[in-house]
Length: 388
Ligand code: SF4
Ligand code: SF4
Image 1 (cartoon, rainbow, N blue to C red):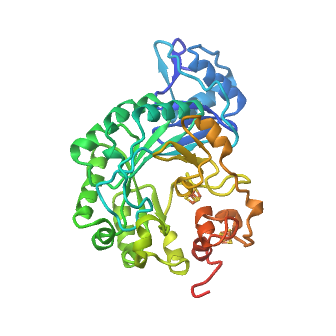
Image 2 (image 1 turned 60 degrees about the horizontal axis):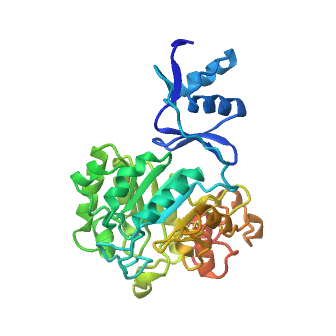
Image 3 (image 1 turned 135 degrees about the vertical axis):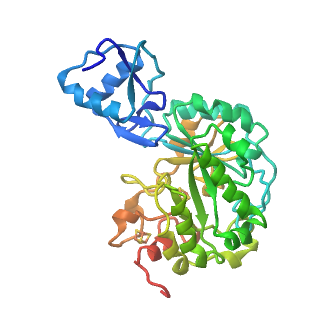
């Protein structure tokens, strides 16, 4: 091996994670690599600042890690905090953290309804960050309301990179100026874009489209990854092809397309709601992502939970009425109590079960009961045809 006299260190944007299996997580690129026990032990030694002897059979692994910029040579050893305590099983990988319910917009489909101007205190946010690190989480999703309106947003922003997980800001984009984009320390911003100008502004208000477009440009200019979230609604159906071309032109790697639930303000604006037989087709436009996903024997959200603005812990933001704990107690305890819905308990019996895995359990619940098929997915996947 070249550079025999040097130390090998993990690069700053990587972290070891002891989840169901050992992994090396590339925080910057959101890539996760499963490790065998030899590779894990080797990387643990690097974290301790040791200089492990390199065997012939280790060389290909080291070359791979170097080529992926996961490790680097260094003149001095660099000690890193290690995952000492194994994560719970299933592991909590994705955490939605609602830091405020303040918002500068009044979107007609917002599931939160009217804002009560509540914020999660900075002290509680810091507790969450510490515990999410301890539990070996991968992706923190900062949500609201509009998270930028949290009175201590910038203090929180400044400490985010101290933690070995990826942070994603979920924003409506209208407050992201050039200056704001430059100050952000998150790894990614997910922008809500609910159509082209007309479809977007019908829901979100006049003047919002231009500001959101500017936000995408400002963020990309400072090399922040931008993903997009779109809600299917009555006034954007005809705009989807144009929206898809726009998203492609901006090289957006992740487009999360979903259906709003009839909650909050949508209860008073139900003319925007689209039925499963109409909306199913449009779900197919989305790509990438996957933090809501099903895994092994579990249905959706197998590795996800949410902390709401009052500090309660629940399965996800849509299950806020069924809290299972509070951050005052501990994230780990709350996570262990999140109800696990098993694939085998669903009444779904269809040929695409392996790919679909039952869709969204909240949608199933509001359509009837927690264990029935999610009709939006049944139409999206052609199991039900329009008009059935
Ligand atoms: S219930 Fe729906 S929103 Fe909640 S985790 Fe499952 S897919 Fe996601
Ligand atoms: S397509 Fe429908 S029935 Fe099939 S797994 Fe998905 S939700 Fe269940």
